[in-house]
Image (tube, rainbow, N blue to C red; front, side, top):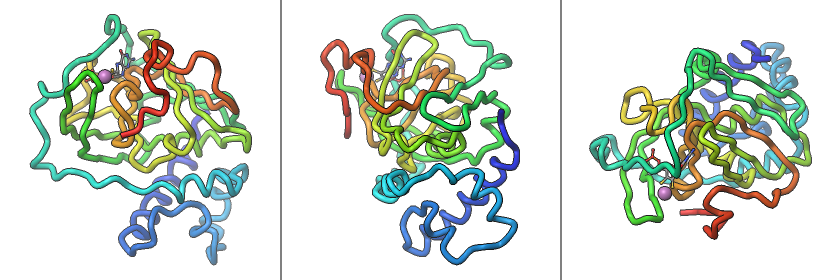
Amino acid sequence: MFDQQLANYLRLQNRLSRRQMLQGAGFSGLGLLLGGCGTTLLSEPIGKVFDPLNGNLNALMLSNKPVPEFPVSAIEPDEKLLINTFDATPQIDPSKFQLTINGAVNNPLKLSIADLQTLPLTSMVIQHVCVEGWAAIVQWGGVRLSDLILLAKPKPNARYVYFKSADGYYESWDLASSLHPQTLMAYQRNGRPLSVDNGAPLRLASPIKLGYKQSKWVTQITLVDQLMPAKGYWEDLGYEWFGGI
Ligand SMILES: Nc1nc2c(c(=O)[nH]1)N[C@H]1C(S)=C(S)[C@@H](COP(=O)(O)O)O[C@H]1N2
Ligand SMILES: [Mo]
């Protein structure tokens, strides 16, 4: 279940890593925080969140370079982000919605929208690129996927992340891209709550992947040690799996 103490800790951790980023120390993982910091305030929640983290996960996070963002003035009108859905828009009751995080984790989670909104909100202005030949500069607001993954305490064998959507869409990502600081589970677009057609209540948004990797209406995030034969809705029809920009 969701743990308020962990939410508070993540808020603190995000503040610290932002400060370190400003100081030019790059995106901070556990190492910087643990080094020389043994206060009772921090040590307990750090232990709770990060015990299962091995060097591999920490290295993946440190290898992630933030992508330059656009200024707010560059945000394009809502209509520039075309609705692109392979089938129908699913019906989701936001009051009953729960995001499940499971698989190769020590702390499986079920989070309501209210739970998600207690976690730190990150905003970014990036370009969404669809392989069908359109793009749009969009502001997204949401929770870092890395925060959710760390809350779930990944097991050392976790390598990939599957995303299940309410319309039957499915996707898989490598763990490093999932831990990128600008990979968000977004619930806001262009300063307002996400519209249902654009993936409300919760969708992936990231400047490092093509549009088809960015699942809308995500209901389940599953960590796995290897890819399954089904890799993604469009990938299984021939699109490239990594889908990097
Ligand atoms: N669940 C789900 N997510 C999806 C899709 C989809 O059909 N179903 N289409 C993808 C594609 S191809 C693109 S370009 C983007 C489009 O997002 P938008 O409809 O919010 O513009 O969503 C992606 N995520
Ligand atoms: Mo797309």
